[in-house]
Amino acid sequence: MGGALSYLADQLAELEAQGMRLRIRTLQAEQRARTRYDGRDVINLASNNYLGLAAHPEVKEAAARAAREFGAGSGAVRTIAGTMTLHEELERRFAAFKGAEAALMFPSGFAANAGTVAAILTRDDVIVSDELNHASIIDGARLSRAEIRVFPHRDVEAADRLLAESEGKARKLLITDGVFSMDGDVAPLPALVEVAERRGAIMMVDDAHGSGVLGPGGKGTVAHFGIDPSRVDVQVGTLSKAVGVLGGFIAGPPHLIEWLKNRGRPFLFSTSAPPAVVAACLAALDVMEREPERIERLWSNTRFFKEGLHALGFDTGASETPITPVIAGEERKAQELSAGLWEEGVFTPAVVYPTVPRGKARVRTIVTADHTEDDLAQALEAFERVGRKLGLI
Image (cartoon, rainbow, N blue to C red; front, side, top):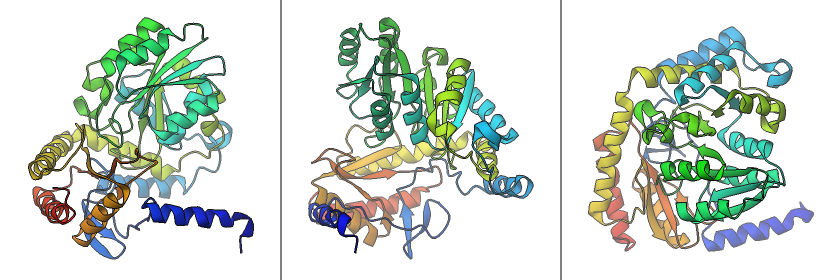
């Protein structure tokens, strides 16, 4: 069976032999700090649910109420018949949250990145991109057909040099993650913004892991550094991480948003988000604004867990956010670390090549506001037992 595709079975076997084949576990309860996967109750260190909003009672009730009032789906793309008052309200709220003039909702953060980069550039332009930027940025850059020039991670001088060497291009885009999703470090955004301004480049920040986490009120990396939002031309956000629901956002000047409504392919050709999703996002923003202690608790938990890992002697790389990698090195070692922790009741999947470079395989831990110190202390005890067994500490 599937003779023409049989080569894929061989390639999967190769992945298995190299310790790089993914095994997906199935959530059987709410997305919480302690929950159930594959029939096992575990301490969950794998979720992007930073503020614990995915299962918040108000957020769930808002979703249910919107479904009852407006139906299960929107039935169309936004540009034909699928724009609802809820979508427009959420866009106003997100623009205000990011300090931008306007905003536009996309089906996902991935679609927001890829669709925007592809829509605003052409083959006559150049993209200067951090080497560790998210896959959605890389895909959008390829789709745009612009020249792609990559600078070493967080190397501002290299970014400046590449922009200077691209003076003949029609337009230049300087793009970076705000928080890097695999290493948990933060972009040197003030210096990059200055470079973009000096070189006449568009400045774009993918703040998927910064929104709801960094800055006053969780407004993100731009606010974290005290940068005037008007100096960042394009801010990308997500609604599936700290906000706890689903969707992506672009925030920026009105003419950018209007252009994306006309030429942003994921926006143009995707059915709009269902009412339950949009209403849940609005409720989550309400909770974030009303309960700033959630962000404080997230950071308190982050400090506790990082200090515990460091005291044990684990390598957590350059992390400075709730994303804390525990680097094992070789792919099989990372798989063994993840499997050992699973047996100890801690869920944190292995991350291997091509998501991270060869030899930098790790488990990526993310603490949330909903973890207790007891949860994290138990997880640290499991890390100690498994880490000693594997010779990592």
